[in-house]
Length: 133
Image 1: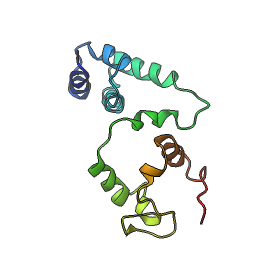
Image 2: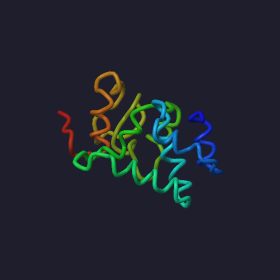
Image 3: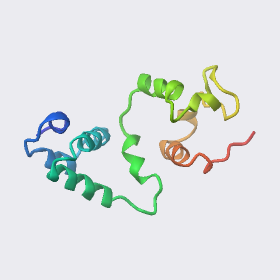
């Protein structure tokens, strides 16, 4: 079964092939598979696979649960989250391309200045990275 098929099935039906996809995902699809499994965890098999995946994460790594978000993504959706997400409220402190607040560091071009691991660590613990200025 292809990953896209597993995602579809996890979202609405269970045919059995999802197990294979959860164990061997394609880069960029893991987050979609995890979210699909979360939505379908009332199914015992899916719940066990999700629990096994979570148990396999490095407990000493505070950002391990978020590492699946390092692959894939949607720039337009990311901008929307940055500007409007109620819980994150990124734009309240940070500015990108002249939009946003001034209390936090300017983030225009941050993706070309820092690697994804750096950004993930910062998002996992906002006080973990001290920016000069």
